[in-house]
Image 1 (cartoon, helix red, strand yellow):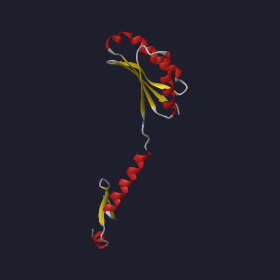
Image 2 (cartoon, rainbow, N blue to C red; image 1 turned 120 degrees about the vertical axis):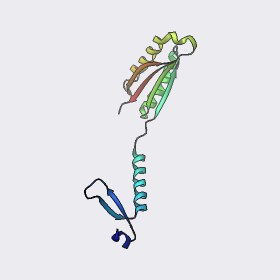
Image 3 (spheres, one colour; image 1 turned 90 degrees about the vertical axis):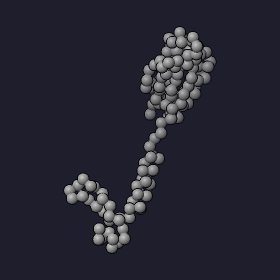
Image 4 (cartoon, helix red, strand yellow; image 1 turned 90 degrees about the horizontal axis):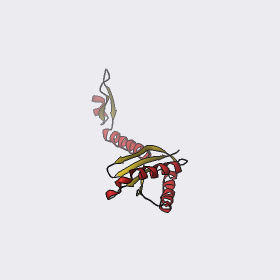
Length: 135
C-alpha cells in the first residue's frame, strides 16, 4: 500500500484465492478501460448466426417452389442458416403429409449446399425444418 501511495497508483488484487493473495500496483481506471477494449474486440470477432426464413403453403405450386428454392440456395451459399416452414391456414392442417413431403423435397434438393439440422416438426399450425450451410 505504501509503494502504491508513493507512485500515486492503485493496489489491485489480482488473485484473491492464492496463498498469499496476488496484488499489483497499477492505474485501475486504465486497467478497466483496457479490459473493456479487449472484451469488445473478442465480441466483434465472434461469428453471428444469421437465420433466413422461407415460407411455403401446403399446396405450393412447382414454379413457386423453384423460385423459393433458388432463394434458399443463395442464403445457404452466403453462410446463413435456413428455416423453412409450411404454414397451415384454417382447415389446411389436414394436408400435414403434403407439407412434410414438400420440406423433405426441399432438403433433398439443397443437399449439396447444406445439411438438415432438424427434420420437419409440427408446432401448432407450422411445420418447421432447419438447414445449416456446408462449410
